[in-house]
Image 1 (spheres, rainbow, N blue to C red):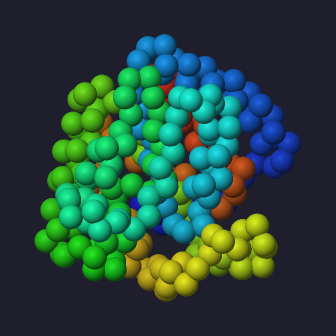
Image 2: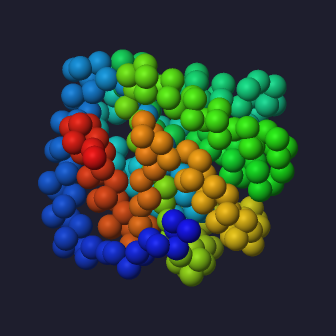
Length: 236
């Protein structure tokens, strides 16, 4: 299994983090200006375990950017109007135009993750979705979009620790709810779904980048480095 092989002990101390972040701030801004000046279209999506640090990483990535050049969409349960349409529709309408960066906090992979686990989609629907998603992403990249897919991985123990912190800290309490604990009880089911997702949707035009998330400093710097590398067209 892919996630079993991820080294979650990787870390950066505060001094290393500050030094790295200071260097990368300007590089991230330069990349955004390149997107604007060259009329590029950039899509960055974040998936991962609950409390894995997606929101914090998005905040650090976008802090150096001109807010006029990017948009962030946090995906929650679909509305009745969205349910009446193909599940990809609500993502199509938010895709970037030339010179824009769009970041999805959760994404179309909900069809093969939460919708699969919670049975909001039938087995036939979520099994069919792997090909639909691959075709969707191929259409985007064939049209010239730059696509980055990040998955935040943390240990079960680290998630428990973060849940407990959210329950006790006033500024974080809004982030935790009954659904989070219910999802935690389905850890093993999600693990299987994640492994299926990697196996079936890690493609040459849309690679998955697994981010070691137990140490937030390490994860945030890795995201910024991957973003800069991709925009410089140095990605392997």
